[in-house]
Image (cartoon, rainbow, N blue to C red):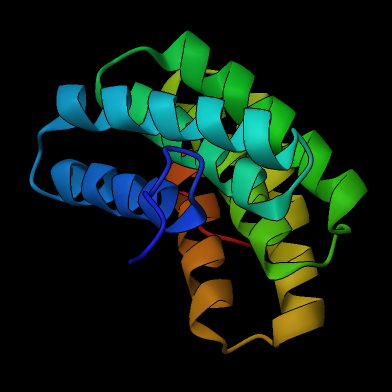
Length: 160
């Protein structure tokens, strides 16, 4: 007979996270937020606030907050996530680069174009150095920078 599965079981928490991601993918953002909040709370309690899975959960919740228009909450979580990922995983870790791009995009969404441009520029430089100029993630970062420059009124958003 197998042991009863607890809410703290990592498979249960991972399944909840995956279900939240599925809800998000089909536009059910309210349901996604609820599940991402529960997942983050469980991961913080069981794994601690600095575990990579906890950091990923915080980023997922920040993205979901952005989708439901709670941009202030999204930016706050993205800022915290990036700071913790840089400290825990290092500034060159792939997840840290993703977190940097997410925060830069969030800054643009709230109209903080100066901060968005600066962070997108930093992220692009890191991706070019780490991944190479033609890597798909680098190309995506280059496009994100072009878009935020255009939104900021910096000409047509073309790079130098």
